[in-house]
Image (tube, rainbow, N blue to C red; front, side, top):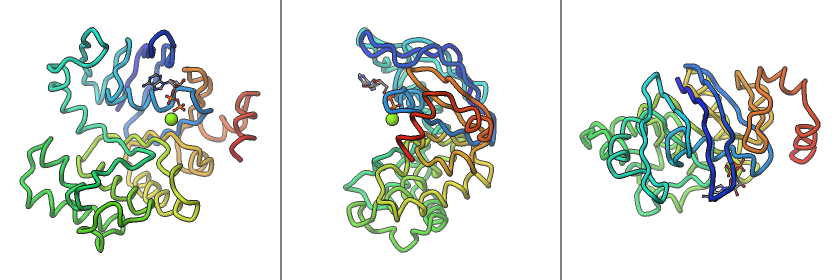
Length: 250
Ligand code: ADP
Ligand code: MG
């Protein structure tokens, strides 16, 4: 579903992603773990060109994401316009939810389909209501994000991601900003999506999720994927760096 070849990313002189090759298969749930600063978020953000790679190729469902950059390393306007398909096929859920604060829950969920995919309002709203039911927030459709708990906001963000009918959802530490007692309500939804066969790439510190829900775990350090395999293999093989990482977070 996602195919990455020779991906490099530099910020100024600093190499943040170093020649990454990665394939994510359809229906696969892949967890990415590793220390802070390893390049996990940057890798995720490169997958939908929220961050522009310095070099490398990205394919989604065999279609190549073509990008041209200007002198400042930003996407050219033309590239940006041509990547609408990528933004609808690869949705993202952020650590800080990133909901629009001045829009209701319902409008947060319908905005993408209406603007990007030109879905008529009525249709977008009917779909959004179904998705908000799915994440247990049918009562909250007319609320503003500020009136919701973190767990509820993140569930809205997941409904918003689903509303685009993506082929893949990327999650960047989706539970890290939540109070501990609210973590499970977001994880429960993610487990449900995983069981339904959604293709998911999840940067996480939730080792139980990585171990029990994902099909594959990647360990990243210094811009490289240094271990990759089934959860049992990776957690069994632990190298010195991973042991150090595990001691810190558990
Ligand atoms: P992780 O998500 O694993 O903690 P990141 O991908 O956020 O790591 O960051 C990897 C490295 O890239 C870090 O050293 C970070 O400081 C740097 N970095 C990330 N984003 C930027 C940016 N926009 N400008 C400059 N440096 C950045
Ligand atoms: Mg990060």
